[in-house]
Length: 262
Image (cartoon, rainbow, N blue to C red; front, side, top):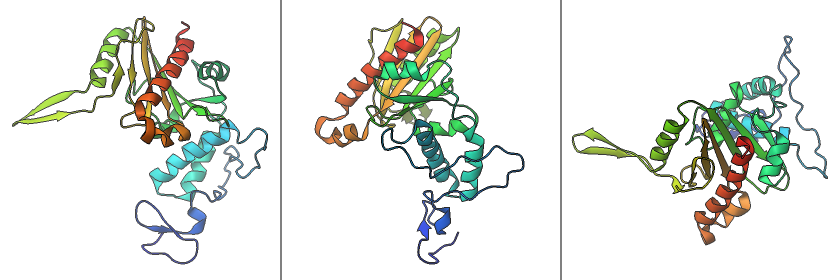
């Protein structure tokens, strides 16, 4: 890395420093010593024109892209990441199978349980609700009828109290810090009286670009949040976010029903 360009192909990262061509996020990662580690993910394999890019490859690109931003584009770190995450790419969501997700979302998707190093995907997902609950990432297929989504499920004897806290947070919270200073958080409640399960509410897309629904049924809580597609995002200036949020809340409710078996 350098404080200035050293020649053709050098690129400037978000930290303001310059990096050689081979360290660019789009460049193939340099092979790592094996030391008995599992083989690295094979990049550059041609995708079938009929099926498009496979779901696991999209997951690698999404998670890898997040890691590149976090570490400043270091090729070695990306290679280590690929080795560590490769064995987890076949682990579907523990509470929502890919088949169930496809039916609920009404489109081609793939599910991935988030845990360990794959938790870095939370940087690209909506974690405003049930932040620390077991979560899965849902990646869209080639038709891209939905955006990147998060499904979280929490089973707890305090589910009712947790729901109340999440609803309060969604309405926005003001805290008196003394000396006439009050700090307020942004509200992201879209619709409170949602008739699903024992109680439910929908969220707006403020701050995250994703919106969805939190549902409680007995001692189980499920939050499903769906990001806008590229086509929806381009149309926001004409329709505003309300139409997308309503659509995403409807889709999210179908997914929540599948998780909660209702």
